[in-house]
Image (cartoon, rainbow, N blue to C red; front, top):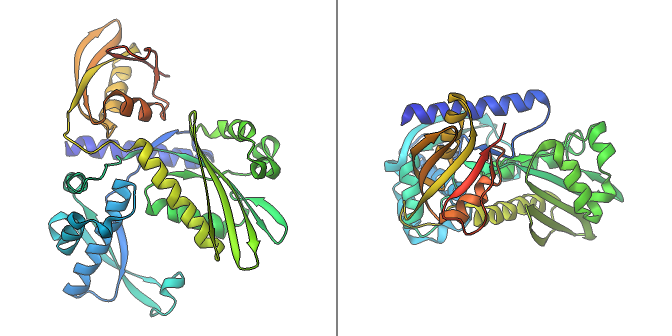
Length: 362
């Protein structure tokens, strides 16, 4: 099991590195490698400071894993946070310069505590608390956000307003959401204008997003409503579903971070596996287009990485196709939602079929 997990993590990291070298992300769903890790500031290396720091780190991990905030008000989770040691696999300290408004009064150097927690124990804890578990495989979200500052409108990404882009990326990392901001190179500029994003022209936005191969798009416009008040209007496009919301705040940076937090919560409600008994739903999955041992391994590996699937076994192998039996949380609907994000399988069955049929994509 450990070897399989290590191989999946290595594969994910290699793919992310390759995408960075190519200058764009070509994965519509990726595996989040640090889902069960967090780093928090601590005053010193005393036992009391360590316990408090580990508790805060555990809260941050629970928020990433469940996909929703509110862990501090859940009695089951509060009890676990009071004694986080049993969930910790590894921790270490480092010293780093203070940064950010919250640490403005900190000494020039301060301790930071990094911790990794046991994934299976955390998952069990989250389910015991009545929350969903959002697995490592998550949609890569294409971000098109336009900001109007002093009458000048610009799309975040590339070299435009790097400090604002960094805030959105950091907020997304804290929630375990893979985000992709546009390169804003000549190709992007030829496909999409600021006015298209500002006007919310979804057809043009989706066309411009095609080069990034993401099935989930986050778009919005942010402007100063009053001298001391910013407003943002945002949309999440996931397939045929569209969610819209707005928020306000007196600080632009906090408004953008809040928008990313709202995005993470929306995604979790849509894609996280429902809590409940593992293996409650079992059914057949037929994958065609399997013509080699490499194809077979790719199909099996992909199904095994999906958090919605708790167990997968092969029941039949024939020319060009393989039949799997899978046990899932949430049934066929939950599985279809997450498979639709990726570029590995394409659905071929019709609604109501007792078995799901997919085609293995090149």
